[in-house]
Image 1: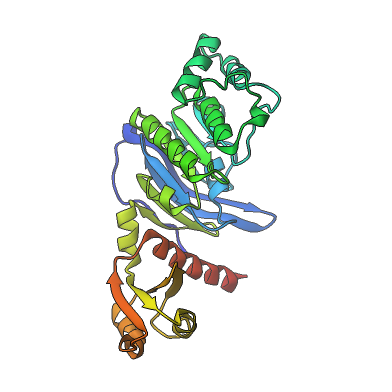
Image 2: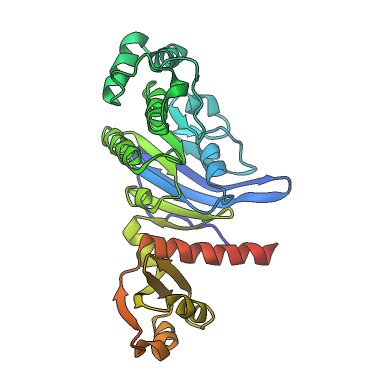
Length: 321
């Protein structure tokens, strides 16, 4: 599968990241294949895809933490191979695992990071970050005793305290409750509104829908990218929502029917989709008049698109194995 490339011309000052032909292998297995992309400044750009798809490797190459085997590119105007030190000084990186000092307080962690990066007035900078992220009253609490949501806020504060131009988030809300996730994303949007560029990998569809643009990566290949609306349109899926009784048996039959590309349960209903509308209509015709079922055509959801992409990408990976 070839690389998916951008066709738009965007002026250099508006570009935070521009890479071409990035590839990376580990132990003879190619993890990222010929990846080319651009990210505009001030954009929240989401990476989605199954585990092992190359999202984290891609993010690490973009910010100079990992050297690609082939390809070229720039991040914040600096070469991702020869100017990695300059990139690192301008990038905040928040990993899946909480990486601050568990036995230091919230205040001590923030002040330590401020001094590490030579932030002017580290005490004042830490105090301001505490206020911004709603950590007031927890300044002296040990980081190790914080809940997942509060640890997430502290980690976000620490990686943005040096005022980076680019923020890299690797599945930052894994294991965090919905309220904390929403508050986290509200803060990310506020920072992007101030000019910060954000790259984020996530498995959550609601988070993907909050990104300005998204990209789907499967087993090292960039399959689609664009706004949520563009990605859904590119899928060319026709989707029906089916209700009624005996949906399990119906799903089993439809999964074996030519013209049906995706069948997925959603609560008490099924989503049935196909990329060829005429073929899908022929496939479901025998069941349309069955009084046990109700059929309603619907716009495909982002989750419909990703389930379809994941099923096809898995097949491609197995075929190549």
